[in-house]
Length: 285
Image 1 (cartoon, rainbow, N blue to C red):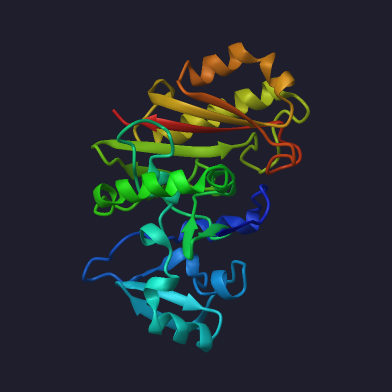
Image 2 (cartoon, rainbow, N blue to C red):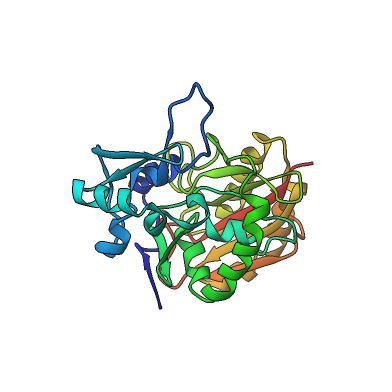
């Protein structure tokens, strides 16, 4: 049996902070232990059936990580049986460990959104973003089997590096180490907002695609990559027929990366003025 929760497929500005401080790996001797899963209470997923922020006064150090809880009772439950309540794969993105279908050998550690979670057979799984958990829900047993097989090779990889501006903050763009060597940059999904936060090209999907292309290109440069390094794209759209009219513009910015998936978001995108959002995976040369 499994349970899952998606607090909307529409990330908000308030959610940005949730995504940033997430299990960045074992700290060095001189560093303060990292805060796990953005300070959310791992026990609450089981007892309350939802994501609940922990409190600094209820904290416990385990596996060189700081775990927070909503109450002393939850902390005590964790202390008695931490293996029952800690997320799988040390709290890294379950789809990333599984390799997320990008390509063979691409298993990696990635950050998580504490609001995108599932409990399967009594074990807690988290993903990088709510859209990823939507994918996870389609075939959890196979995804878990693949991630479990990959984890031995992934668990000792470097922690993901969060890239700041000009990359979007929610979900964060990350630079990850790959299971079979090398690195990859995971961008977005990026929308068409400008520096001020306002949407560029409101009502014009072509103008939005152009703005997104420029944003993705600028973001990739921060990690030493460029548009030609993109190996996969995922385009989230409310109206696929409208998007199809701009295939040439998509190719101009994102090339002929394969696979290239178009995902219809019937419930709308992260911003109601966004007509399209693009996620890109680029192999760093």
